[in-house]
Length: 149
Length: 293
Image 1 (cartoon, each protein chain N blue to C red):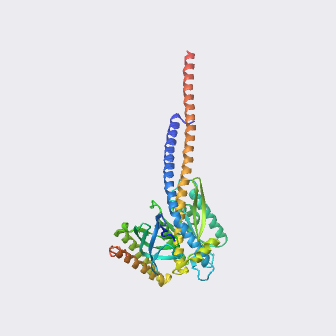
Image 2: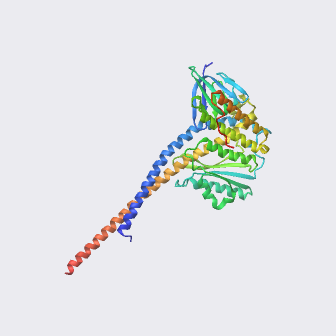
Image 3: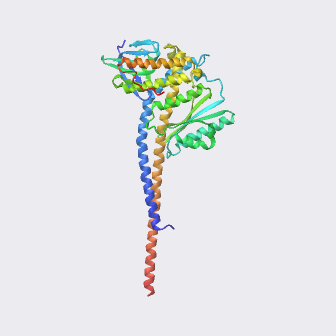
């Protein structure tokens, strides 16, 4: 069995990363998981969080993603993320912006609670919570964002 | 017969016009390259999305629990047309051909007694459809402030469409845009996005999709994916449109530059002729004056 697999991180606008990886750690909606070569084929939804890629030579790269989904095969992992930022580029401003947009979504969902149903509101609130956790996890302050009312 | 001065002025003004169209052509060429690169860069995501969707929809389409975005509302009465055009003109037939296609659809749908609503993206669609169909407009998206089309623009448009769908405002949504084939060929295209069109999955993809484990279950993933796939399709359409617009503008400006060149040639000939005529006339006057003495 090969000891690496092809990892691609793709955003709608461009290809962010394409590398031979030994291991990829992913924040799935139902719990974190690690994909290694030879993994059973799976398609998994992601929550906002950190993706850790360990390349064939042991170099470790981290990305903050705002959700998306990942397609895992025995010899390849393809991550489709709406937004992905390398951890080094993940500044307070970027986090603030993400939080504001997540917050807006919560607001919108709450306003239309009757039509969209409780589930959507819960999902939006959870999304915001995940993002705050992500911020804290990489050492940024999730409380700096100014939420417009 | 225009005077020499008039001709000279006209030659000057056509020369200026030629300079402008030439410059616009070169700007369009540069922008076209960038637009093509952007469209190119967006392709992997869209392709992956499409292949995963094809596998999922093929297995879910038949089941009763299929999401409404896929199965539709069960009706085909109210249509939403999303017409994507540019903010600027001077691009040959680019905007008109998209609008023409949309207009045909409106006419057809209305002839069948269906309700039609229109969302316009870009100023030109609004301007051209306003006269006949102003009463059908439900929303307009202004992209004039947007320099480079980003995914967020597409997402906003898609969210707007999805909101309307959730509120039960329409049954079928169709995108109108121009597909970029080459610099000289852009094809106006209509593409249905809601309910999602199930692509004919071949045996291989069907077999492959059955192998996947889904976490959460297939319906859960499909519910997440469908809205995203609509945003992706809008994004792809916007990018294709941007490339088509620049391609059409380049061709149009190339023609305009060539026409201006022809016109300058014609005017210059005319100018030279009338100048020569004036000289000859003066000479005849002098000679006949001298002979009279």
